[in-house]
Image (cartoon, rainbow over all chains, first blue to last red):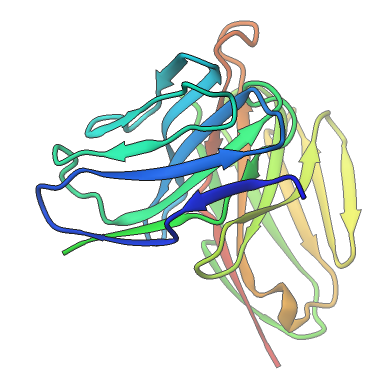
Length: 113
Length: 115
């Protein structure tokens, strides 16, 4: 079945550590996105990528980094520079940049201890 | 900058009754999405509305779009417990002929259906 797989589902991190969240899709979509969701909030865009080896900052990119070396993969690194990283992280993909439907992964919940 | 507002933010519904929730946005757009999110889960696509006057229905939910008023409504018919969830609308903002379009989400409306 086609879809988006995020891992890990739950992750605990100590302050000062970098962590990487995985996002893999087998939908053959060109565009991929990372969103952050905080309790009672909508989704805020961290980074997006329209094509391999290219990505753009979203609204809250500070403290995060991404790569897009393969079409199907778009990992997100939460660095120690991110002041408040505890959140629910959602990866999504679409055929083109915000064209058609966005398909979301199951999410990764990051907690900083 | 596009702003997307949803109201109310929380709605307690009685089983069997009808309700309407709203999504307002501040600038021109040609696409609006409705998503559902269950607690702790991901987002599930409900509707994609692409033109003025578009109406889509799925089960007890019906969504419509008025691009002139910059308003989308989600109507719930005879609410049932299974509809308890948070509903997000998201709007595509056309920044410069689509070259730099951007999707902005509202904060979501949490619906709770009581017996």
